Image (cartoon, rainbow, N blue to C red; front, side):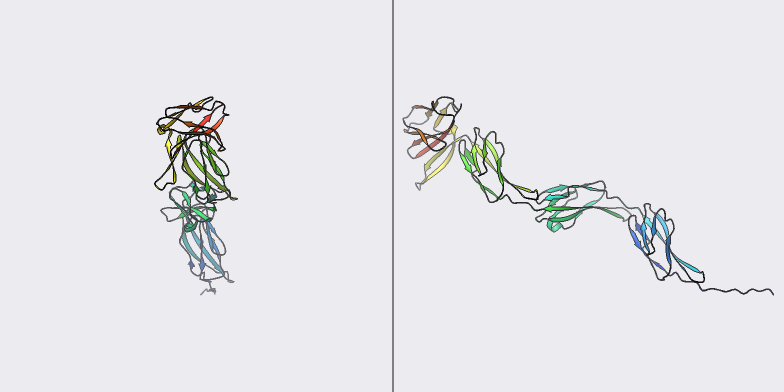
Length: 349
């Protein structure tokens, strides 16, 4: 009989590994074991990911499979290995979001991304604004910050999110403009607004008139329309504009008594007036002709309100005036009974 004594040594127990069996690229998994004292490792580490000694597996740049291992060795030199196969799934690409990072309340921003097939969303939507599926962000009623997100999900159930933080800035209030909407050539309108700290301007200024910083609009030489604007800017660089469209008419102002004997005004087109002045503008003499048979009084008034010429008027008379006037704007006032008609004239150079 030949014989040999052998020793069977105790073997450690690596336990059971717990953790997900799939993970999307760009994510991580935390693995644990029911035993302690071991070391973590994984196969295929150069391609699909690595695991730390805390059991955290971090994906790499490639999809695929790898074996997660937990190896425990004891003083006898014996070891035990627990393992778990996992699959790393391809993730989509949400791209990079392009668009402004700040906006004034009341405005919009168009966002785009280099990714495709995703959906737009934003945080804090109840306060500062919302974004539609075309990437158009519309501000709400409050200033603040929000995160714009573009989320793409693929058939594996993996998703990628691109995001961008934006700031919604407070906007000033230009108020509401108050003033007439129709004016005759040669007249002025006083505009006011409930806003403060702004500047007045108007469109079409070279033709129909100008407005000064006291809100007084002075008509020019032509009839037409213009937009009166009051613009307020704050330290954020945000602006608000109140506006009002007005019409400048080639008209005269008639004053007459109503049934309560108080004076009321009406604007009458010059083509429908009882009087006509020609030529107008004129470099020399003006001629006024009546289309009715009533006598009256004619006053010529300059822009300061001073009566510079006055004369009685008889029916069918052609009244001439203005030969020695300086260039400028004059009102011709015709008074017949309880009716007053004013016509603007322009003495040209």
